[in-house]
Image 1: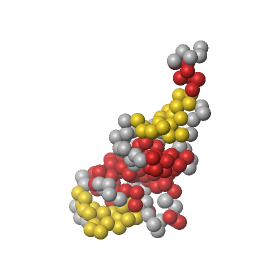
Image 2: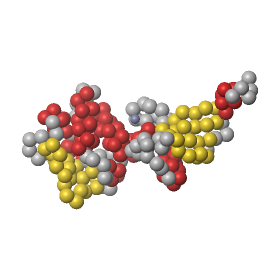
Image 3: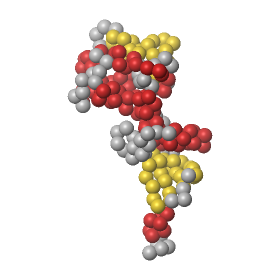
Image 4: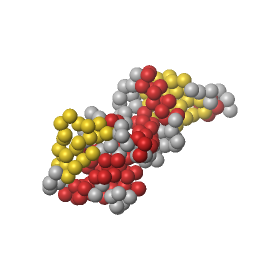
Length: 192
Ligand SMILES: [Zn+2]
């Protein structure tokens, strides 16, 4: 497969023997990060997960969100997200996963709590942890409308190639669509 370039700074355009491929860069990166977050929950990788913040950040959440997150403190810490209740609905963020470094953390926490409340999964259960990983992957991933260098594109495609389930993002959207050369030739009426 050969990279042709980026379309609208949102899709990666590639060609192969078989045809033309468009890859959604956000969905693809989300898949890569989700699998990394999942793998890093294993004990062996706990050590290098979190990135301490120089100045711990405090975030103020809603009553319901705070209630959900309070029950998940231990599990989130295992994922590299070290938060501590600080009275009322406030939490101190002491460390974040390296992959989330530089991203705003309050929206991540709010979305994790919302997703868990929304899906009615109890904090601490596998489904709740999975929701948390998806939220973190989404926030850490390359966005649409983001220009990528050739090196970044190659890095992303290599990582996607190493995924267990590369064809879909964790939410179930396809990461790529493709057109076979034959189908294109038919559309142009080069062949019948
Ligand atoms: Zn997704």
